[in-house]
Length: 246
Image (cartoon, rainbow, N blue to C red; front, side):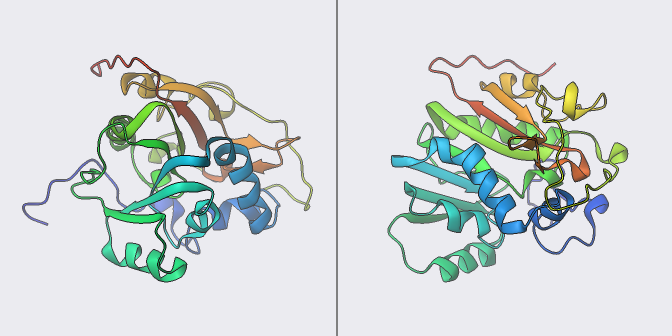
């Protein structure tokens, strides 16, 4: 639209065309796991350690509210942010009136209604797999801005450029297992072409990467590697020094 600032590339990824709704709907069967169990395991593994009394959390791109519904009530305040007013309205309709729920718009791809250093946990599990590397890098700066010192960020995102994405072979059997692969982007599970969301990208934004993996569970039985994605966990240190890209 003329006059509206673009903040990188957030067009739907052609490689993911035909997915039935949110990304998780494809990741769970690829893991040979029931969707409800896959979601529960992800929440327990990556989000549950950071929720609790007094916590303010923010979700970017809540989609249909599947993740929102699991986190609401485990934190003092949950902020949901989306570009589409209809998405935010649908979340309100799904959850009903709640004093612990706040909806804010993403305007020009920024969280202008969220003050600096006001959030303890920021997470996004269905939005960033569809953006390119430069967009993710810019979003990391925005999310770093709103995080309090010692706050945490949990992001499911693509690890390689679109032109290199292929669909990983699915596993078979309900209890199919794999060897867990955790690493910085660009090594180990992320693959040699992993150039999106590397640990250095988080460092530039003033964040410290504590974990980056494409699978979890006792035997790595849960995964986001269908499209070569990863989940990154980072924290905001007490003293932040950001570096200009380059």
